[in-house]
Image (cartoon, rainbow, N blue to C red; front, side):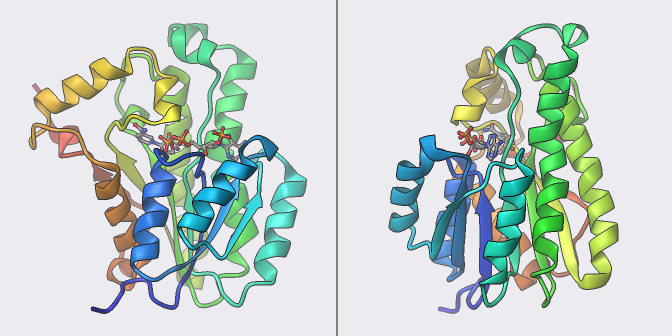
Length: 255
Ligand code: NAP
């Protein structure tokens, strides 16, 4: 059977462990024949991400803390040694626990800027670092959440960062479209990951979605990953600047 990403090279940022959405995406991309380049944030994660990379048959695993300009410059240098780059997956977010736990009105300036820097600005910086290498066009994507456009209890400062991220996707899509580079966001339903554990009462969110989503269940990481395959593949060639939902339909529900 032909593979949807055969001959394509994909850069995936945000694999921390085997529960990471980026890990599910890397697995699906491997299944579809992509050459994988994985990054990890810092020395703390090097060994475990290298091990995961080996199990995924990744061609390269290297460090990239998206808050460090020198790491982003190194990213461009590393990509320059690759034959080609077709896809970028940005699966990164961070906010301080304190800012996630307190009412949004109490958000500190530092906490606000931290969430924006790691979770939204980094998409712009990564897109700039990678676009020059995507000479055959390609597909960039990021991961977002419904809390960008609706108020979700305890999502707070991260919801505002995701709103900025989704706006960035639209501006990036407009800038990079003439180079045939598409830029989209996948809005995933809640999934139990390390990042999600930072959100207070996350299990009640999972229960609420399973009770009210049209499909009466939560989405799986593999389902999110298959949407990423679609966007990375030529099947998604007419789609850019958009937010596509993989959430068992939860976002359509009103009362
Ligand atoms: P995850 O496994 O914890 O992934 C988050 C990743 O961001 C980790 O690899 C983390 O690395 C990385 N990161 C944080 N700061 C970084 C930095 N300065 N430089 C480089 N990497 C950094 O959790 P996840 O749920 O898969 O999250 C992936 C994306 O999906 C996030 O954008 C998240 O908001 C989004 N999303 C998640 C859900 C959900 O319910 N899980 C739903 C919708 C959207 P460290 O572990 O080293 O910090």
